Length: 530
Image (cartoon, rainbow, N blue to C red):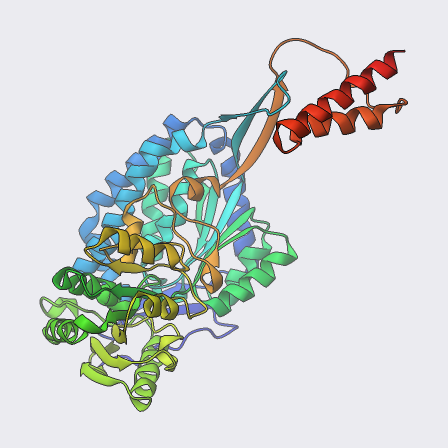
């Protein structure tokens, strides 16, 4: 008999019941960490970070390299854990989690030292000085992360934190608490194998109170990935301790298909954008804006593809789309789809819950005849739903694309490179991919990852993501061993006129203005010498 769907978030709960959402089979329980336990784990990470922060890049690279080896040695076990905890397919666990994490590690090992080494910059008018930027560890970072990518969401903040010389404590979602300890254990084993304290990376488990305790624990910065409403609460709590926060929130990403697009290319990119992780993806292609000239052909193509998708528990055979991670999200998807149909949407494929006797599933869905005013065009669906909205031209496409509170990722499909770039440049988003699903920008790790508007602020990935884990310190020092005093006090007669003339000479617009400043300076200095 199937176990009942778990209900989470009781304020005084001591355990987290863990259940496979694809089968509703119980996995076990995880103890909740109270505020004292959180404080202890953060203190241990802080003690371990002191030595780690003094290590060179070679030592940090060795640890990251060992993490890669550990991940590869345990691929099957990790995929099984991810599948059991999240209900996604084994293929999605491998390609959507193991592969991106390995790529992030490869990039960080290769590029981390370059982006974190001291950087010489201009000293401007202070020609007798040298200037540089130094990138120092912040200390101990915190990460509060969601349930859609059990492995990737844990590793995404750990990798740059370690490369930058920090400790880190992660708080995974209670919905994927079962797999998290093993993932963190692999990291700890790699750290210990290289002779460093495994306390450098910690994990705390629990509900909202545990996350609040982490924010209040004295961490030096926080990464939060999750919903807009929870992001607001996190930001409010972090403000009490003036803790810097990187917020990676929701999205309602546009996916524009122009009338000259390669439809097969666009259709398969849309399949990835809508059905990877059963659509539970912050960079999901949530709104497909298809030019009128190709709309019907595109609808036929994606309708045929989606109706062929297989769904069910991965253990029962080859499947394309897995379960929803949480019953709450399943209810949200069902409500939005039902409301869209009431508002005039047409169901091309799916459109309802399925396999209710086995787990928490929503059928891969295509809704056509979507219009901009529908609720589903403005609220994040976060489920396996493809929305087809007809547009007349690029102007209307851009107008609709930008007509939400979100601005995370985006996609443009056109064989005309200039047109595609023109459209892309007008999209209000942190990321845009041309002739590719926008989420694939994650695989180009030199690119940053993050959004604008209600999708958050701050950046993960790339140079900016690494440097977000540091105190960027400005240093000014002598260029030559020449020592003389800049005598500003006491103020001498004529100082004001001298400086005013010098400012005009340096910053005046055009040669004539600067020459006039130079002449005034000469007269001022001549007068002061008399």
